[in-house]
Length: 210
Image (tube, rainbow, N blue to C red):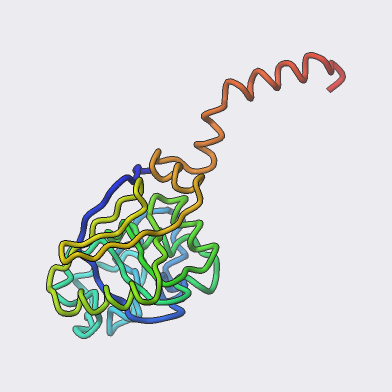
């Protein structure tokens, strides 16, 4: 997966709590067997008037002009701001796939559902937890400043903006290291492939009956 060190991008506000994975990636799109092509359908029922299906071009859809992702001022946004308990509901990994494939590199929220948080990390997308006051400030700043950008630095565990906003966030060392290196748990295990092979040879060599 793509390593994550720093990212600067336009922030888009989704000022809602308890956004579940069915809203992020509705169940009808999970019939697809590939891991790609989900980006156009993220928040599908909130973004479009008509019912969609996997493979239906966005040019044939009827967008809801009031939904935040359909507003021209947020075109190209790569940082999503949300409220509490983002990614709750089922554990479908399609939800982070869709957000990432839509173009998001960073999700910033007051809190995340645990499984969703871990799935983001495993797919190279950074979930950042900030305090309620910090999130409230960002919602107001984004609303009043078109093109409001944030710089997210995983090495320093910081979020900053040109208006002077600056915040720190916590993240487990292993998850942070994996994101920076661009690997998941399998990749981390394979870094020790030679040691594993040597151990297996020694272990089996002393147990010929296995």
